[in-house]
Image (cartoon, rainbow, N blue to C red; front, side, top):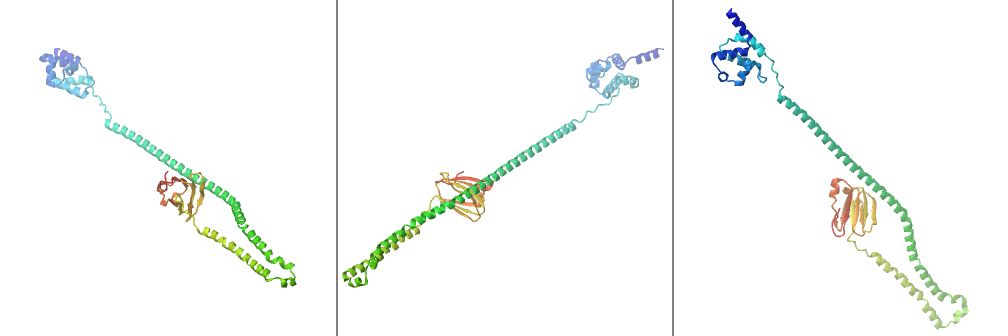
Length: 335
């Protein structure tokens, strides 16, 4: 009866209470049990109060209870039913691998960054291409416009050149015609002196003419020959004037063309010395008042000499654009 009552009483006690009673019977304190089991005093207290720490896994808790039971001489088999209630086995929650998740997020972020980088690169390339195309198109349109203007001006100059040529021809004709009337009048004035008496004189009177009068007529006859000699000698000064050559202008602009090229040259007074197309192997010599302003459609197709020195157009040839430059009177060409 007493044994069964004791057994029933032990079953009524919880695992923590049985361990506490056994410890007290052996005269051990919680501090002594904690030192022998290498546990904290709070852990021993939680076990005796049947508390399961939230930060302690059930496997470790069951191990601590078994060690405590062996220390106070309680069979482990008697505590197994209570262990199932106090420290049931729970499936451990395995946290996802932090390194893998971090790597995945980093990879995703790197992917977005790479996509953004490529997008910016494509935008920059597109804008650069659009800018180059607009600049190239503007240059082509400008060259076409200048070529049209030059052709129109060339047509106007050709239409105006016809009356200018006729006026110069008439001027030359007027300059040369006064000489012939002078000669004819001189001849006419001298001729009547010899021929006028002839119709009025009879054959009989010719025989009676005294010798002194005959001498006068013969002396008057060579006079026209003497008057004609200055007229024949007069053209000599004009021939000598045509032989003289004009002095070379130090500000002359010499251009040689290796290909077809549009060109416009303006001097300091604003006068257009030339505006139009020059063909391959053509030469152009211009003189005016310096400085000269030049517009060249194809800088690679022309070689310019100014004041006996070549003009450098390499910066325009490298960029393949219309050359706009000013040639000063004292210095090298300036932009």
